[in-house]
Every structure is written in C-alpha cells, then in structure tokens.
Length: 199
Image 1 (tube, helix red, strand yellow):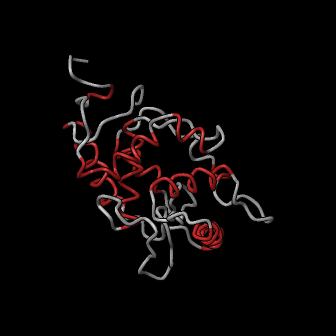
Image 2 (cartoon, rainbow, N blue to C red):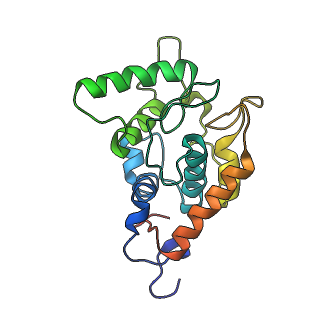
C-alpha cells in the first residue's frame, strides 16, 4: 500500500457528493454497521464483495446512484424496495414499510432500507411459515477472494438454480458485473472511500 492509499488500493480522502448514496451503502456493507443491524449474522463485506452487491442493487432498482430505493418493479414480478422483494418477501416488506410510514420514517431513506435488509436476513420479518431469505446462508457461506465481477454473479444467483441472494428470473449477470466494475472504479479513483478499517 502506497502513501495516500487506503485498504483495497483505493485513494483515501473525501468521497464525491455525486455518489452520496453509493457511499452510504459502501460504508454500511464494509463496516460493523451491517453486523450490528443484522444482530451479528452478516459480517462486514470486503470492498470487492460490496461493489458486487451494489452492482446488483443498481440493476435491481434501475438507479445508477441508488437515489430511489422504494421502487416498484415494472415487470411481472412486482418487486419493491432496494432488493426488489417479491412474493412473501414483498408481503413482509410492505408491512414493515407501512409501519415505518406510520411512525414518520421515510422508507426511501438509505438508513431504513439498510436496516430492513439486515433485519430481513436476520429473520426479524419472517412469517410463521419460516425463513424468508436467511435460510440460504448466502452471507455466511460466501467464498473468499472474490473480485467484484465474481461477487456480482455470486450475489445474483438465479431463481432457476435456487442460488444467490437476489435470485432473479432473468439474471442479467453481465449488466450486474458491469455495474460492479463501474463502482469498483469509483472506489479505485477515490470518488468512493472505504470506512476506516473496511476493505
């Protein structure tokens, strides 16, 4: 690591305000915040894993800067939210969203979306029928040493293969990998910055 660089090879300094939401999620995923929010279930992601996950989120939401997170999928799946929750996952999301609104909380905020994501994986929104997504152990069992493209493919998985976190009907893996690479390049250029100790 050369002077002026942070872990992962990215340049340290101040992140770009143009990428405020990407920065918010990067800090969440690469710090103890994700572990605390998930009650210890999800350990912090590496920079590469986080860029892969963020690339998936961009494709899921259609928002390159993750500016609108409480979005509803235009297609037949009718997914909603940062992770495009569908089916029983959408039912639980909608219930939590309604509760947040009743408490004056903006469900489009990064903080609420991050908290819901972590809580859902930790099982705090599971219906009596069983686990919504934590049963996959996709965070606990992730392979070591993935680059951003490999991470994007891993998190994506597919509905057909019953693998991954997002499990879309049509994976669009190349698009997700391209977005993961774009976000990785923002990190390498210093426009995004890892949290202290992250990486």
